[in-house]
Image 1 (cartoon, rainbow, N blue to C red):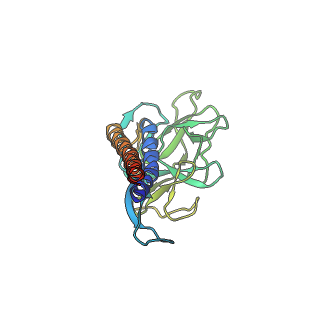
Image 2: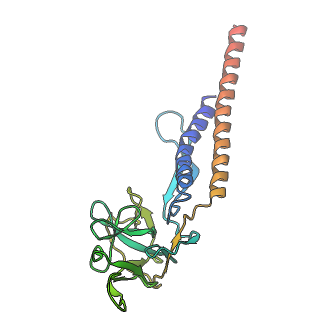
Image 3: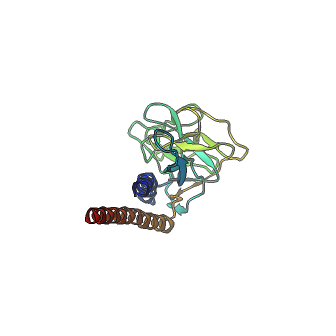
Length: 254
């Protein structure tokens, strides 16, 4: 009986990782630019060690690769909102100063006059963080060029190019998630750069890309996982009852 409990207990422990990734997806259904990354599966591996060489253990296998499937595009008509198309990503400066990447497009100008994402990361241009002249109004073209104009200027207002978003096509590489939630190149240290892909990055101004998590699918998977968990617990309880019944029978026989 201990082998059955051993296997069921291993399954329950491995499923905890699967549940964590599902809960994370559900929590980010409405997060702007969120991308799924965790894929989990269960596999059986042979247990090595002392004792009989006949036991197998359930283990969870995880793969953390950003899935660049596009999310729904929502029109906002806000000048600083952008939706990034294809497999392009936006370069930002993480809290530790390293270069990282994101699909988040809810941009704003902070109190220091620098362009940042809704998460507080500085948006990088061709030469570093993008600085906006005080009091200027900003708009972004579909190619990522950032223009600014002075609303107080008399006469015809001519927008002035102040920088260009550092957009990179990630078609030829795989990205993974950093500890702070931003993206980095899979297998490379944080802050590593990568070569631009063959596709020209394009953005949609005045719009935001939603999460690519399907709420119905994620909820269905979570319900299925909960039922599997309950089945494993029920199996361990039944195994315990059978073991106790057998022990009681032996005592009666003796």
